[in-house]
Length: 285
Image (cartoon, rainbow, N blue to C red; front, side, top):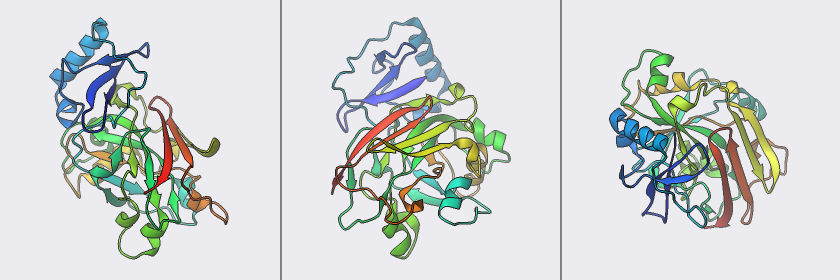
């Protein structure tokens, strides 16, 4: 299923995109698309049955804002340098273990919402990424297979990053990852049963119409199942938590000088096959 949340900021309603591309209202069945839904197989089955029946009310999509497809997110966990190509382009050795950082849940915005370039920023960068949404509580998992079994769904993410804040200002990466609006999510959450292989997805990003990133999740150093297993030994993962699994080559930081960091007025578009497409206009904060 493709699950969405649509409507004004703070007043989103749950929706479903059916096989014909018709937007359907789920508010008569569920209150939100969140961890509680993903953890409840019985409710998910009712949603699937209702979708198959074709009886869900149609929502007019014209002019309707698409919000982040997951509500009430507990935490967003980022994985750094998780593509061989990206590590190579910035001259870094592939890490021996996953590099972790946290993004505040309040950085999450809708897929087409405006993204704000922080005041004083000169190195705001793009990162097209596969997002993993946890579907059941994960603690001390033993295998990658168990890791995949705890995935509720997948989403498209732009892990916007300010490189000067992240790398040159001391401390942890969090400074460059947690600026307002820095985690556009969606447009929809695709339930895990509809993604046959998360390591076989094309990941693309354009800036002002120019293709900048053209990778595939097969290039990930630590595949999705391994990432979930690994994280479960350092933190408890709860339904609705989001893992941002790294970006392929093609970010501004990895390009020759003068590096084409984002400026107000730039438009970024992101796409992963099966997970939809985003479009953000960047403006000054």
